[in-house]
Image (tube, rainbow, N blue to C red; front, side, top):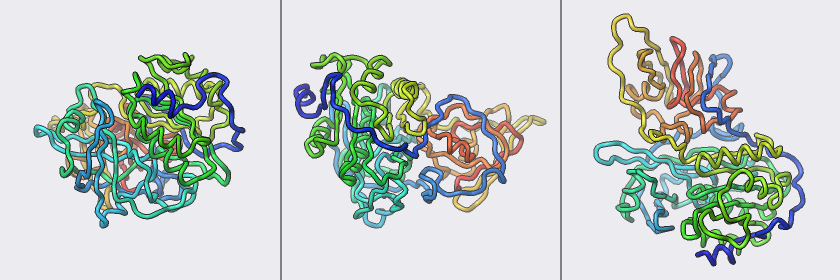
Length: 440
């Protein structure tokens, strides 16, 4: 495997790597506001109903819904990772249409506890979720997809990932949420575009779909990938990346970085700290020639890479971020148990919401500090959510009235916050009455 990395996938492995001509223009993407605590306020007049809460402007938002899908195949990727393919029946083809970079959520019950986990789709779609040429760089639509593929890597202490690696097999049936997310190019390009990605470990999964789809559908685009792993045997999709390099030798540049294994060049051996990242981005990739950046991996690496890019002058609007984990011990704990009844005279918050065209109302004691998602789930079990940790964005809604405090935000971008979107799994009401709209 180490030989494969050294000979089959790499671009130039020194500081004298050739540079491509600079790409003209700036991508019309949006960067995530990574501040951990956000206070949001909105009113119905300030944030009227709009479409495209998770997509580029002008596209319709599709409500994420769970469906039972058959596991078509399970194959090992590394000693602690598998690829799982789900068969999509013709009647659900539209529901599971997707854009490269999107994710799905899997739901099941283990030992009496419901678990939901989000996983990026790792294969290029054969048809986009929207034929709108303003989305995804104007890539044309194709025939309907018949399978969905995700990669599951064992997490330390992860009950779901451990179960999947040890027991999941072809023929099993899992509940799968329809694709969601906006880790996709948002620029509209009538010229060759150049993209770059920084990934570590399982952060490679959305990059696989992005690289294959964009290079395959746009014959003049180019892609640079920095991919960090501990050793070569830990690298997921190593052979597939080499095959993509063989298909697109002049347009795909692979830069493998190993933290616990020596590479021929010192620059590609060791941890991706700020100094190494800055050298890679200025002497090998050349940030000024990139239209859009994609970052996915451990929280610390993603934040570090984002900081380096911003310091090098990359506009925040050109940086797209996807997190699988924040590193918090309770991030997969799900919504907290419901609070008890409010004591006589204790102040309460009133939460009004709209979901699937119907309205609901629930109250919550101020002392409980209950999130909008947790409160709404007490009256509507179909309220959308997946990670409940502020990462995936499935629970987002428009705040129509009142004020809230968001504890974490790793999913919404500045333009979405400006439109009044909040993460209901992280938002606690701070006004007596709050109104949110999941249909917007």
